[in-house]
Length: 538
Image (cartoon, rainbow, N blue to C red; front, top):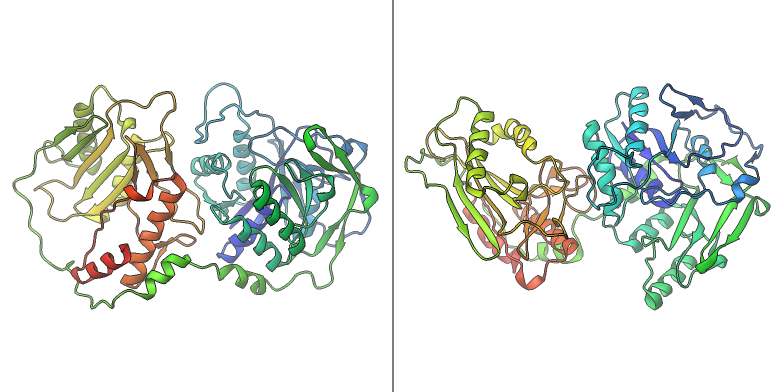
């Protein structure tokens, strides 16, 4: 079961459909609104924490909801995190989707404005209002395990949802993450969304664009021309426009707002927005379109991009002859821990516990104690990349749980974790690491840590980043051939090789790694796979 965070905009509602297509059952909607939100004909109840709960009525009423003159004023919040325009209409979505809607007022401000979020003591941040909202929803729906949101390119929004989810033990679902903006608009059209522009704030967009449907091919074509001329983001990812979805597949009703219920407001700098004075939900005949029809359209999301698919077609066949059954012996002559320094980086290699330990927790603590002594007075959190060798991969879950305690801050080191049966005798863990020769300056640590499930690349739910910058080089975590949306492995050696490299390439592209300096280390368990690796890289 999952809860969908919605703003009324196209991205949050499209993400909801992706979650359903990937097997989640949406049981509730969640929304955060300005503290002055007007509530039309409210029948909401309030729980003990102050969360308002809107239950869908058994049948739809065609009587209009009068929103009042207050809705003509812009009480939209200047929020870095939440879309709040059109917030007075949000209770109508409970009726349209036939799901309970949980709402809380945004009481915090944009206190921590760093891209990678961490909770801070002192002034209340607006992100923590989401924590309270999800607490209320989980109390009413204890089987909820995941949260959907509509982040496409916003690291700011995504990392805040991920922070809240991690602390509550929930999975963040951001299926639109890094999707092409043209692809988003195309999916809206394919599914039959009606997503109206309710605010514009960009060169080339004026009040004439208001109430246009961004799922209409004619509007999409005009946005494409503006992209070519002015460089705007066609899906509005730069804040060029905001939308309100009034109809979508599977809804039992559509939101109908007559022209006299819409007030156009023009501000300085070319911005314009729509205020609403009345709206109603109108029943749609046969509106509850079979889920299989539209889910199928989203399930055809291609796993491989064009370049990867072309490479896959050219790869040689493989006759498997795995080395996994080869017996290993303990290494009785372990390499001593070493520290290599260059003008830009420090490399630490082959760290093991000084003596055998009685538990994995003690052994990991001894390993990190040795690392701390080697890099002193620098903290462990300056480390940018770690290679972790384990005698038995069956120990991974326990070791990872202890490892998490050493890197609780945003942007933990990237990590490669490999099973290596012939570690030194009596040892279960060997660690190597790298870090910059000097602590990060005022610009701070740079990296990429995506913990949400998406169609882009695997989520890093453990305490490690996809990539962290060290001395001009991006150090990338180990990439295994997981299908990003499901986190399941592909099977054939060719697909595994191509998919793992596609993950790596997508990470390089997001962080902006120069193509000429890209290098990779490949781990295989089968000698016969090496030609596939070489050809895939080529």
